[in-house]
Length: 254
Image (cartoon, rainbow, N blue to C red):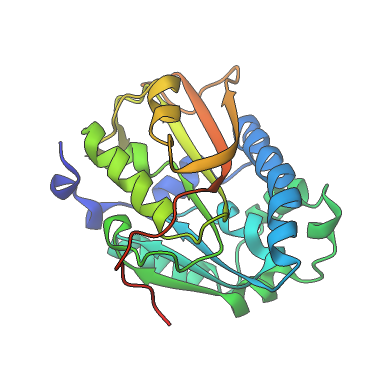
């Protein structure tokens, strides 16, 4: 199934949230720890010169990628394609639910997160939701970015996976820190009664998709005793910094 064939406006964000994020799982904890450590080094260095603008692509009903960027950003854009997910996010960022406190507590093991006095207020002030496609992002616009379980979970076609990854990374300025998460060997997934596509990727394919696009890579394959669902083998976290310069003549917003 190609990305264009997905029934994205039928995506149920409440059902997806309940299954994935109503409680902190061991694999998400490991992802948070990895992102926390990477951003504490590279985002802090980038933000030493000026506050950053952040980008989270394909947020769905997941706030923790955005929360991981919060200490360094004066503005964060959550780009989401599905209409129902946009509505869910616009409501949630105004005063996020208590479940996310457990996720934030993991981040707060790094002092820079703990120094944020009121993350709910800060997120409400700094985050905005924009309906849009990963394939249509502005180039070289954002200073830091996250894209979790998106590039691998929007199509069965490897070329679309690679294009989504490239579009995300090209949306960041050269040298920008980023974090991307994947489902390894995914066979697709269901949200209630609706099936959504995924591309089956191994570690080599994931790392090859970043060749020439990123540097300072840190890759973590995450396997826990109890998988989230059937139809995949592991989660993979990749943190890095963008390396490719913007394509000559590409549109860069003011």
